[in-house]
Length: 398
Image (tube, rainbow, N blue to C red):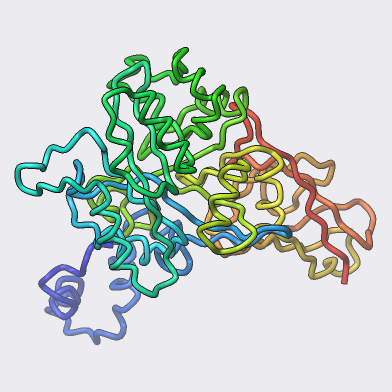
């Protein structure tokens, strides 16, 4: 949010007041407040900020913890711009549960200034900086090749150094031998796909068949790919969303203005490294990007159920118009389209439910009901290109 101009509130008041009339400052406070409101960013005026600050929060589902993770991060130990401890501090400020340090194995543009034969060094610094905090830092690397193999991250490995192989297939095989979870990076990257369309090469398909590729990024940094979702569904790959951050998270994603980094929500049984790894291999993942929630139906639906609830405060007088409240328990803006026969009395059929906020509705039920049910298409949740799940919210008449 922009700071107050350096000339300060007293001079601002003097600017607003007709000095020749010497009116009392208190009488002009409404004008001052109006001026300050107009100076605020439009996004902040709309309330489009995380209610708890920058922390990314999603409720746990009925069966799993909803863990926030970023598995694609760079530092100066490859082609990033910051020291590894900064990545740890950013993740802690974002309230993430887990990050992976994934330096390029082959691409080392800072090697003249930061020579490091040990490819584990960035992870060691970041993990040490996390100390005894709640943040889980896991070891990873980026296999950096031209097509047909392309770029891929492997996380939960034991030692990055043996992955530095002349042959790309040997690097993938080594990652698999260490138990690494490997996913295709930015398959829609225009440096390798001029049309921005994600596709898989025969060599990548062979690695999938051998069980050496397990996921694919549908979101990378500031890009999203419908085709990558289709590939994930077709080849049973985990759906991944990452920041691929090189600079500062705050600058790249306008954190101060209510933005957030792209992440993967991992549905894990426990908040441990082993449980996160198990969930990744099981494909229990959801990508979160620009308030869009992207994943398979069986994974996003429990997350929606945990995020949205509806309650009724009763009917208005002796009418059949009831007041209901929809509450959002998550950090995402939910966009809902009414698909039920019940119509609203105070707004149209499209509503936005703000993060950790509520929306008050008046609904016309025709006759008084003990239980009010309203069905919605959840437009900000994507289960396939153009596909959005439908939910039913219920409220019991008090």
